[in-house]
Image (cartoon, rainbow, N blue to C red; front, side, top):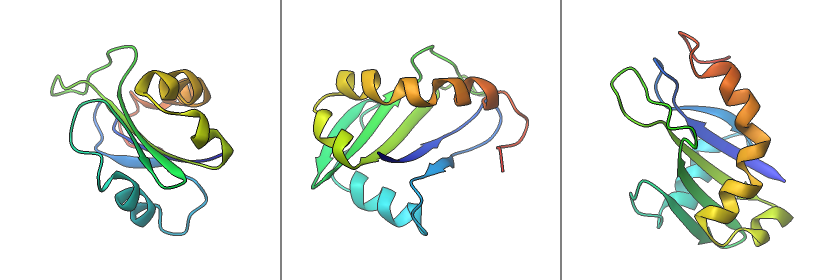
Length: 111
């Protein structure tokens, strides 16, 4: 599975924490989310990819009090298994939860 992951931390703004090994993850991210709308949670199938937006499952908030969003572009065979936000939460979140726990309170985004 190839995964692009954009999120923000407690004190740092939106960053790509995973790039799916794409040379330009922003282009892939924008293409996948183009039709996803702006709802707090979304699962949008974009061809052979899924654009998934979830609110932080633990309700973590940034220093301004906003719930942390996580946006993923899922590529590869696992994308075919994701049809709903609940599917994405069950399949994708366990793969990144530990990393986010490690970095979300850092004063600067990880390099």
